Length: 260
Image (cartoon, rainbow, N blue to C red; front, side):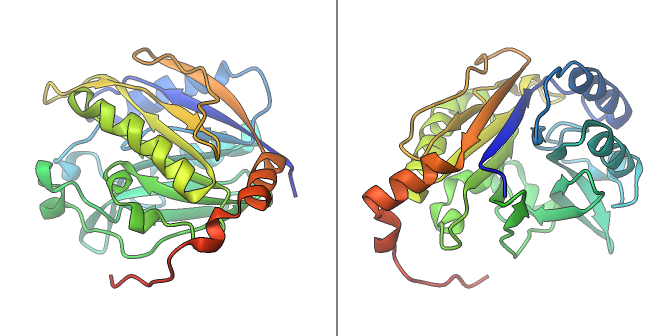
């Protein structure tokens, strides 16, 4: 069990609906990470941007992007995660994938599809919350709009890291900042959010604000707010244990179940 988890947050501009070019750009960025990390985090729909045209960018779980992720994870000896458009059984999913160096893949389908953009009409929503056990760290992956729904993220599994990947637009970035911090505090876990920057094919602007908060809601990263960049943060199990034992807030959490 690792007492530390070193995580690279990659805040990037995305080439609209061009998986090959996005893979090439991320390969260059990841190659420049000079230190060893345990986990590399890419944004939501990192191969395409937040598109409502899945037929032009969708792949299977054996497609080029998944093969690329497995190769990269092995080469870097680091897990890699982010979401992309997956086609499966005549349905499209906004699927978060977590690819380990061993080749193991764990996936989570976005539960809350973004109705304002019509995502619910095009993508099939997920129904299962996922907890990943990686190097002794329990990680809960979520995608973008999921951030607005605290019940779905409720820490009933004693996870250590709540992880959001997103294409969260600039006009509502204050909500992103506030809710990431709130999710860390209320769940007494680290909370990481990785967002994109730049303009997409619909002229929506994204301002990044990728961040990592500790269990007290203190930001511990130095990611530039509105620029492309990579920041590396070190998470400490001792920090989680210290404040959960001292404050014991999770002992008072509500006991309820969800209907999905």
